[in-house]
Image 1 (cartoon, one colour):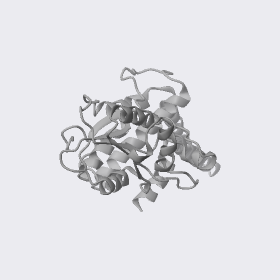
Image 2 (spheres, rainbow, N blue to C red; image 1 turned 90 degrees about the horizontal axis):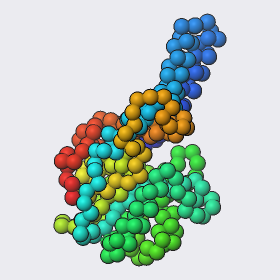
Image 3 (cartoon, rainbow, N blue to C red; image 1 turned 135 degrees about the horizontal axis):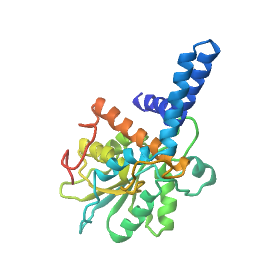
Length: 269
C-alpha cells in the first residue's frame, strides 16, 4: 500500500503536475467568479514553474544530498558490489530488448568498471519492474545484457528482480545475499539517492561502503536566473523534491532513523 500511495502522491505533487493542477483550479475558480482564488492558484503555479525552471533552486536542493556521503578511498578487497536499479529505460527495453540507459545510467557504467577492477567480486543488481501504468522491464532483467556486453561474466551476477522501491532493494538484497561478517560490499547508486539508500541498508543490517555516482550538481551553483536550460533545471528540481519527500516519508514511517541520514548514523561497512 505504501508503494502505491507514494506513486499517486508523487504524481500529484511533482512541480510540473502541481503547476498544472493549480492552473486548472484557478481556471475553475475564475469560471465561478472566485477571482481572488483564481489569482492565487495562477500565481502559485507561476512561482513553482518559474523557480523550478529559471533558477538554480533544484541544484541548491540537490547538492546537500550529493555531498552527504563523499566517495571514500576504494578498499583493497571487495567481496561484492550492490547496484541499485533506476538507471535503465525499462519501458523501452521491454519492447526493444536492448539496454538503453537513462540519466542515472552511470550506476551501470560504474558497476562495469568496478567489476573489472575487482574480478573476484560478486555483482548484485537490485531492481524489479516499477511502472504503475506502463509495462516495463526491471533493471535486474536488463542489466545482464548490458554487463555481459561489457565483458562481465554472467556467473558473477546475482539478480534481485522483485523490488519496486529502495526499501525493498535493501530487504530483498540482504535476504538474497546473506552477507557474512567481515565481508566488504560496495553500495552503488546516484549520489543524491545515497543518504536514503545507505540508511535503509543500515536499517536492514546490511553493512556497505557507499560508492556514490551520477552526480547532477557541480557544487558551485549560485543564485541567479537562467543558470541552466529550463528543461534541465526543471528536471533537477523534480529530482530534488522527490528525494527530499522520500527521505521525510521514510523517516515518518519509521523506515529510516532520521530525515537526513549521513555518515556515522549507522554502520558504514
